Image (tube, rainbow, N blue to C red; front, top):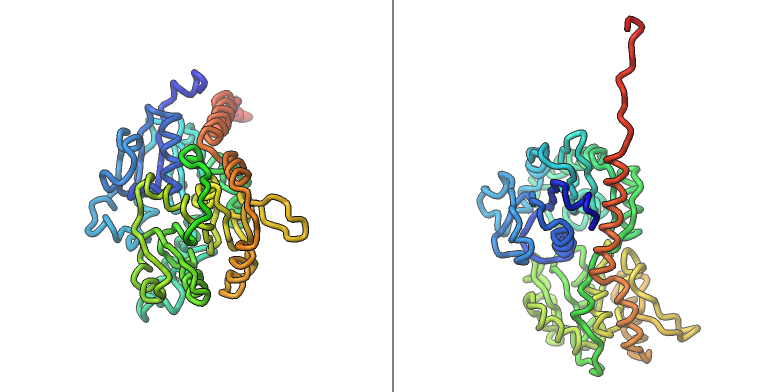
Length: 391
């Protein structure tokens, strides 16, 4: 890191600290780059994130004091914009926010540089509104109330995007949505994946695997129905609000496992035939982890998966890292699974491909981007006050 960056007073802003997922892996690297930084977040469940993050001074909003915040914090969504705007950043030279909800909506002082790494524009109110708040998921009262809040959140989301000096996106897919909703350009830096923790093995695999939060847009139910028809073994690692519904939907060929520690998760990857990735994701760290383990991916052919997976082309038979299915239907997924079982995959080619998304590559790109933007910001010309005719 440049000497100039080391001397800065830096704040990191994150939506919430409730577990170690992809967004927290980005935050962890930022903690490496700026070990002296403070962290601001809506709420923090102590012990839920890595020791590296927990070691920083963490400031929370009033949401952290509300009842049931440990598990039901999303119910306070309409309060999030106010909560994030109440933070004071006058003491800081640089603010880096990592956001998939409201963290990018802070109010920075005029002289403070604000760089936002965006995982996605707020998906609850934009492209996945129906998945979260569709008429079939809400009661009568909620159907009347939520559209009003959603309209307010969309307006706030667009307005607050003007407070960001520079946007970074975790994929071209997200950069396109930033341009669509905010009318802003974004530089793409793919998020970090700990590819060094995984290595290709010799096992052909005993089952197909899903590693996912159990929420509607992940489309885990699609995979469950398809594998029930095929009567092929499917292991689902994860938890979430959809858990009970999905378990009721599953047949005897499907096994559910709670979130696993890294060492055990590595074994699940190593012993699977292929990873099933049925949802449309902004990037998708899980497929990269599976590929680092030498395993092919069977993925829905939209979103960030198109940027990380080399799709198999039966016409050429060239090395690939997965197969895309074009429609989110059981039949389309079943055809892709059947094709995948006929392909002779090269686990070492798959693992090499995954290494381009490793942690050190992300860190180097982030440091270079932030240093360049700080240099331009710090040395920008001063705007003089125009003289009047009386001076």
